[in-house]
Image (cartoon, rainbow, N blue to C red; front, side, top):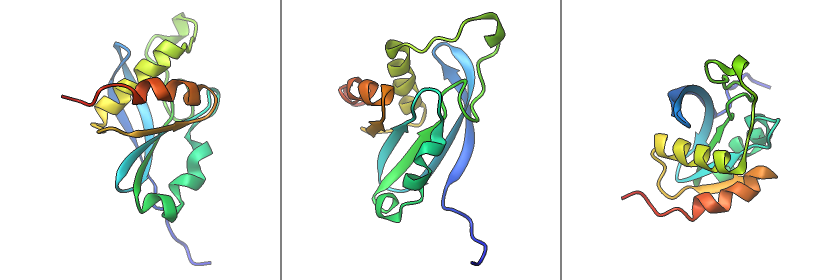
Length: 130
């Protein structure tokens, strides 16, 4: 096999998330309708590697995968060692909405498993940006 790069772009987004500075790792591939993929708590964006490499999907969708804070390549927020980590449904929904806003996603399709599956529908019900 000849050497080749996968069509995935990975980079870090530095922004305020849930009222605090964060450094979030994001991977994306493809073009078209934004497809925001939510990984399982305790996992990271690697669970969507096959989707990011599937040309049948990326021909029509801009597949976006982020590692939640404390997961994968995303850093925990400053001062994390002085607090208990908690992931509530309300906090996760707010996180998804703030990440969508930071990436300027217009009506993204939201896809997830486990907690991502239960938190995706409230995010999709949000009115479009003014």
